[in-house]
Image 1 (cartoon, rainbow, N blue to C red):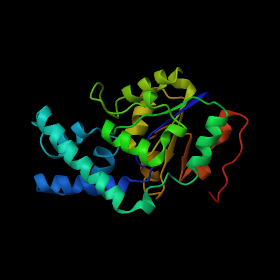
Image 2 (cartoon, rainbow, N blue to C red):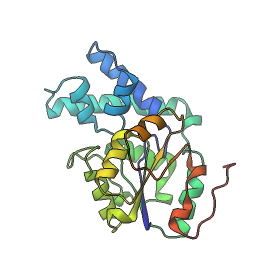
Image 3 (cartoon, one colour):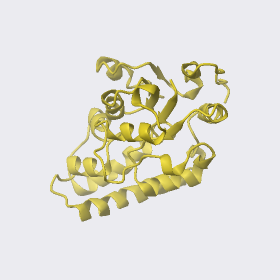
Image 4 (spheres, rainbow, N blue to C red):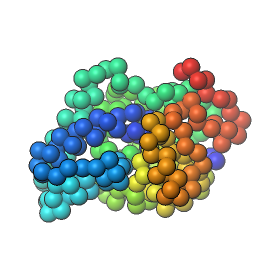
Length: 233
């Protein structure tokens, strides 16, 4: 493998519960429906705000309504993040992996279903410019369909000037793993910190290289001469 594409939410930053909380608060505010754990997995994580809102709130929302509701949800999400500064940390082991990739000059980028406002928030909070070029990050700008369509990973591979089959993708969401598979990504790694989705990932035959709990288990050997990530980071 020659390059790597990271999903962000639930992968680099363990914020899945915060996104779920923000979405559930919004959905319950505008609709009376209940949401199952499987619906959250299949129809929230990895999807664009437009897709989520049209699925849960109304398929008849216009662009202005989608933009207004999206910003309402994302502002609430960012406030939830800032309420507990101790949780504003990168996933265990990730910083060491990123330093290794930087030292080895391995092409890398982020492909995220989030919008620009959240991306700016992450670059500021986590100082992502240490490891990533902002202009090469692929985010939801409304110009391509969201996961599970492959477009986001095809665009990300192009950003780092590699063909998809020469890239690794690491993802936590079912829709993202399916998108990577459809994009023809060479190696796909699932991250599942709580181990609650492993059976679903295997059952759906995602052709995964590995399922890890955090980046202390990330197989740097996929890039050739590498060192193991220390477990105590």
